[in-house]
Image: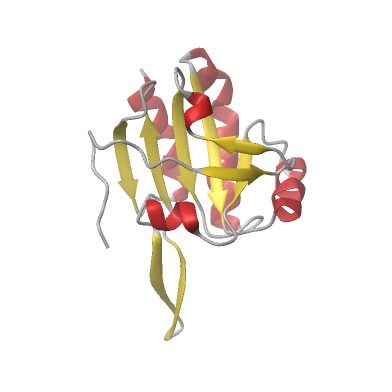
Amino acid sequence: MSFLKVGDPAPEFSALTDDGTTMTLASLRGKKVILYFYPKDDTPGCTTQACGLRDSYPLIEEKNGVVLGVSPDTVKSHLNFRMKFNLPFALLADTEHVIAEAYGVWAEKSMYGKKSMGIERSQFIIDEAGTLVNVQYNIKPAESATVAMQVLV
């Protein structure tokens, strides 16, 4: 698996959001994009991560930023998760893990000795021109918002 690094162009994508509309990275040119990948809607770590970014969202918007969450969950699951926690940003349904593979975060995981494929919790910050300015593989859920705010200053 090849890892992305700061200075690389962010891989383009097109995906359905939690409200059923299509979102592309290209449509966000001119904005700073915090693209974060998480394993599953409405689980403890994923909720911590999403709510941290939610709580920082007014400041992120002030810095010309937007947040997008990506997981393999369905549009319906994303909508429920977003509504339950009042998330002010879109969640992308990557059910075929195309975006996760493009960003190098679809990886083998091991839990209780059982191996499976899944999302490696990660975060990418993309500048207004579509270039990666921050790359965090294996980010801790509680650190997403803090890292984002440090980069967006």
